[in-house]
Length: 251
Image (tube, rainbow, N blue to C red):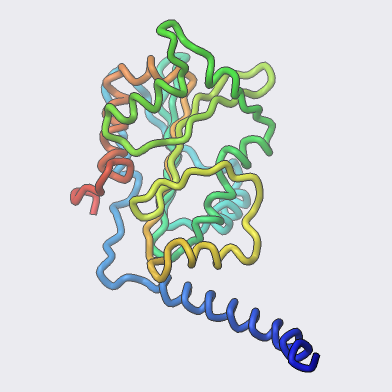
């Protein structure tokens, strides 16, 4: 009985020491890599001029300076860009954010995807439209997967969102941790103990560069894919982060 009592009494201490060890090891693994070279600014990596008569405008991530500061503090990115390409009634946008190795937990980035932020701001996901067969019998979701594979780009998440009485937004987005695509349906902010599963998954290799790239379009992707200007943007994003291997020209 005394042995069991001692074990119960020591359990909180063992758990605390284990948690401290996990956090300490994660900190050790998250230290800056002295050989790491950050990419060029996103405004130079994402094309500013493209073929096809597209007008290109950069927009802030939020309307007011206060909101911009809050977003920057919450996401803690090293660099971010929101670029709008417009041609008449057609539009597509590129949002890109970059984190140096060890700067941000993947689970914190995962809590700020369209699955949480867009749904929380009045958008409704059109899951049926994503799977609806098109004229060739293939859904847009399946077509996007095929087109990305054909273009040698990493697999992406695909969504269609719509506001009430608004134009639908066709989204593809990537969260890349190192060279690994993070595939998830984020539902809530990560718990306080999220560093433990990160440690178990990645070990001491916490020094991983991260990217988040989102392309939104008022035009369905099978149609937009055929546009020469859009292909220029995809090619640049592939070299920047979305290709199988990073390009030396972006370093």
